Length: 100
Image 1 (cartoon, rainbow, N blue to C red):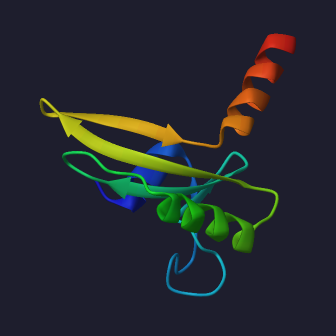
Image 2 (image 1 turned 90 degrees about the vertical axis):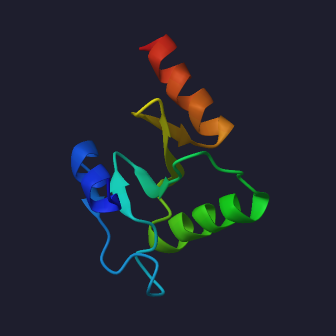
């Protein structure tokens, strides 16, 4: 599935010219996140440089968003979708749920 298809499935708003200009980096905005979609059939090795780019793109686009890397992999003919976010963001999300 394409980035466009994943974003549509998520209900995310696509960014204009994502990755090609100085602004509106990342692939889509979704619920306060700037999402960078990556599809790797067999898996991915995430490096500090890769994560730094995802964070920089989010900061350049909209400082109110949090970066997220959505990784799409395949196993046994099925798609596995994972979200990679900063630990502090996960803590905030669980605090809201625990206190809400």
